Length: 203
Ligand SMILES: [Zn+2]
Ligand SMILES: [Zn+2]
Ligand SMILES: [Zn+2]
Image (cartoon, rainbow, N blue to C red; front, side):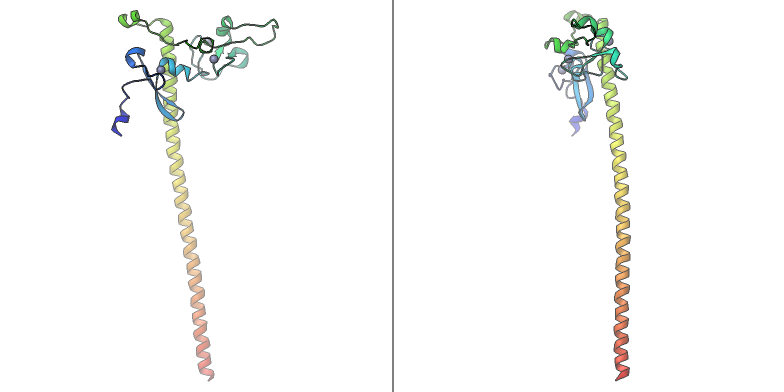
């Protein structure tokens, strides 16, 4: 069990890239499990939480008239960011067709660091935005995971208390039933004795 507390040598669960190659491996709460994702896989698995063009992480999803949704995946982009990448049909009233970068090109990667970046140990502005978005999504998912774990523990404690209360009530009920039965039985015994005694006196 001890080995679980230590990051599994910082390898992406999804693509198996290492921290050395992808710079950061994020620890995220994903589908109720703790996972390790590289920046690219983290963003690809969290479409809809950020704009794939400007990399702003959404607090709330942008309102319908300010967003464009990818035709093929849950990705949501700011309308203003996506318009240059979308195609409009002849009918001006129709919604522009938008494909997120991943759906437009399946080889697309959100985060690439070049050999030069590696040597200079710097990342450009765009890569920095991508890293920041991924880190933010990871942080939010972990705090939600912690909140969910706390909620689960509280729920279990409440359930345990309710179960204890029910058990106590059931025990009390049982005790009173037993007491009543015993009382009834002892009445019968008394009555029988009385009958017996009456019989004796009558004879
Ligand atoms: Zn990966
Ligand atoms: Zn945007
Ligand atoms: Zn897409």
